[in-house]
Length: 75
Image (cartoon, helix red, strand yellow):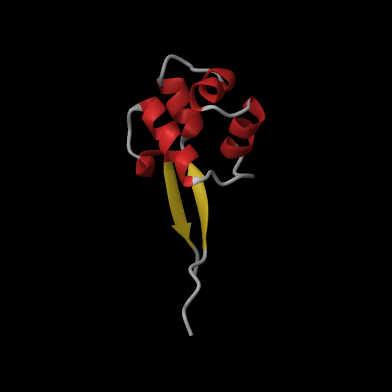
């Protein structure tokens, strides 16, 4: 049987926003094409982004996706 990987996706969106001239949630949302509510949900860990959205967010900060999103593996 194939094993199922378990884990939690965490992110550093809030930290990157503040490191980029205290970018607001609305500014980031507009730049990546989503609503402010989506950014709120992402930052609070209530929503996992699509690959496309994760790439857009990384591009907005000029970093790699892995710099923003991390998979914390659980046993």
